[in-house]
Amino acid sequence: MFKKYRSLLYPLLLNSVLLPPLKATKSLPSSRLVDFLKQQSPQTLKEGLKVAPGGDESTLALYEGDSLHLQKMIDDPKRTNFEKKFINTDLLRTKGDFKEADRQLKICHKTYFMEGSGIHLSPINLGAMICDQLLAGNYFLEGNLAAWGKKIDDIKNTYYPPIRKFAGLEQFSLFDIKMGNLSVPPSEIPPFTVTGIDQQQTLPLQSQKFTQEGNKSITWNVPYLTASLNGTDFSFFLGTDTAISFLPKALSHSPHVHIVGHIEIATNGRGEAYNGDLGIVDELKIGTAILKNVPFLFTNTDEASLSLMVLQKLGKIKIDRQYFTFGKDIDCHCQKDIQLGSIFDGRFHALRYQITWQGKTEMAAINLRLTDAHLSFMVFQPDFTPEEEKQSFEMDREINGKKIISSIYLTDGNLSIDGIDYGKRLKSVEKDELHIPAKVIGVSILDKGSLYLDFINHKACLKPRLRTC
Image (cartoon, helix red, strand yellow):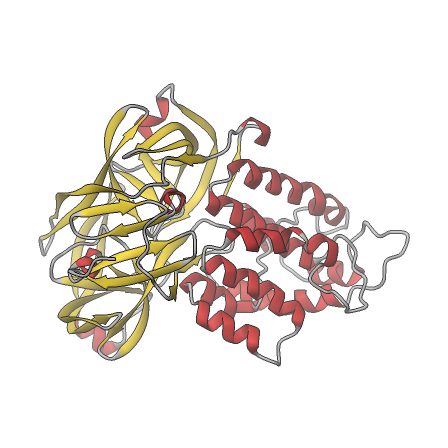
């Protein structure tokens, strides 16, 4: 998924910086930019141009939530200040600091991140396009659907008409505003709010068994939280590897649900893709916390889940095997930055954590629905080496009503996380050509530790299970 970003980014950045000084036609794009766009295939222009700050390197670091690598890129003296400004907004997103990231992106239109350069840019330039698309993605990840929809409209109205006037560019479009859209005016969408999180509260986590039949039968004990959806109790799984919360399509007909748009694609930590109606639910009550106008994706699923969009609204949370605790006054004195992986347009958002497998540090998405007692670490990759092929076997499973046959091999190794020794564990490696390469750790991360996430101060840590904060 990152190749198209690589091939287009650097030439586009170069053209954006080399735009000529403004003349009477200042609302027109640069002739250099137009010439470059004309070199692209009609299919690329129609499907949408992919642009990203920092090229494939920062795009991958953003996906992995690798804030350390992004900081190294910012500190690299070979990079221009222009690049560093954009990479810094990526860094802020990986920490969940949307407030500061949004502030910087909003002033982009005054400076285009080129203060003191002496270069004057047309309003129709790549830097502004990147700022606007990043800002739209941030708004979606925050659950600010009104601002997200308005920004997408602004992008289409600002950039499309002047560029499409040129012969051969009539179908020009930008890829990263195509993940979804509103079907109602942004002004009709009320704000997503939360109250009742000032005091710490603890709720029990129940466990539900799922058995997957096939060549090898596997049973999961999946933890879930009971919460009230418009006055009715539902079991919600904790979607720490999804941007938007999921509900079954059948629930979209409730009078307390308002369909406001459509999502073309949303993905989870495994790279599985979903689509469906975008709706807001009048009220979600978690303990004494009351969330109003909550965004949900109504899709082909039998279960309900609460995503990072909801979890971050609770301020600070602590998760162990038995309990879910949240509230602004929790403090586990974590020193590490939280690490949140995402994709440019906001379709994907996942909690990442550094684990050590066989002495090697890996970044893995945390998926609390992967809960097999023996299988702790899962890797999805597009192909196998000949040696891996020899070890593999086929497994049948069903996803969204479709039978899938996967090639998998298993290997064991030593796992440790934050200095906590988990001993010998089992890793599965699956050949998966359809999804984004991914590394995922399941709920076994809670076997010996409690996971603490501070969305207010942007910190995270894993504390030994018997140690209280």
